[in-house]
Image (cartoon, rainbow, N blue to C red; front, side, top):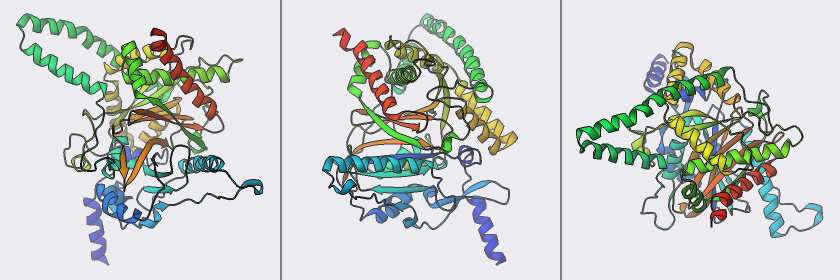
Length: 497
């Protein structure tokens, strides 16, 4: 018995420690999960599920076969366990009984199952993943909706990794639908193009004369000075927002405690990337500027519609934008991410950026894009995100992960919403010969009434919205987002033709 205990203690000592962010997200203060939905074009055949999970999914990363334990020093570590796959796979049954004794038509059946699926996602978002088994599960929904013949839902705890890591894991299970031998390709973000131009400019400048080099220094000096000023301003404001300053109560923020435990509605709206690019070209902005402008305008339209008499549509509201802090272009393979000293390591490599929602009048829709462009450009010329990361590290070392988790909880609670985005493939994907018609994801368990996520796929941008049921009118909010996009497109493109 003593030998067995010694072997167990030795195994725990060599087990991988849970990252600081992983500890924050599994604390008593906060528990965050990611729900990813893959929409199948054809009815789902689940006969190969267990084999795929065992042969493809589990080998992606040891964390999918591990649970969190505390070693003798109280440090959380990943402990390898035997995975009972049947405990992680769920196949819900929606009652097909007709209402009022009448037979359902195909359309009414689809609407019924879509409502059931929406309620199922809402319930799934509220439930906690059991800590006694690996922190993931899969839900195979075989019923049709208006957008799919069936849906595959992954729920993974954020402690396993951030969106970049988890997207990489899902992509490891998927292939190109037209040719599985050819790798999937992804759009290049604007920030990566800008870095490429900066490298080219530096190379050109190195070949110029000495006076040209001096011109470059003179040109960059004001940018460096403004960067220092912006860093001080942004870091100070971020610190105040995380501790003392709360957003106003508004139609999208109740300011109540415990909102992370309330039911949410999860719905999506789709925009054409080609149309977004038209707006981008005519306004001389980036795709991110355009999308932020659409979201911000949609929020102000919703506020105005819900508070015509109280005039609260201009309430002070802040979005927490999640940034991937990996300085890379595109996705790396999982095998590359898990290598020691990897350029883009597996795990949670992200940071929060406070971005105020403009309170300008919605009568000038392009102002929202230009305001978003100005704020994002200014905040890019700032190292406040790095300083915030250093602050969290210092807080964790001095006060421990629980105190740091409470700080993160306060950061989230004091703002009105979280916004995050991911790049998806340009080509159609397939999972076990099931073509994927669409995908979206949602972050669950955050102490906010509103969460907006985005993912691109096959020329479309899918916005998913998680909105508290008791506070936010989901159909109205969705209509406001669509109306905001139409207004911006009309002002930037249609009116100029």
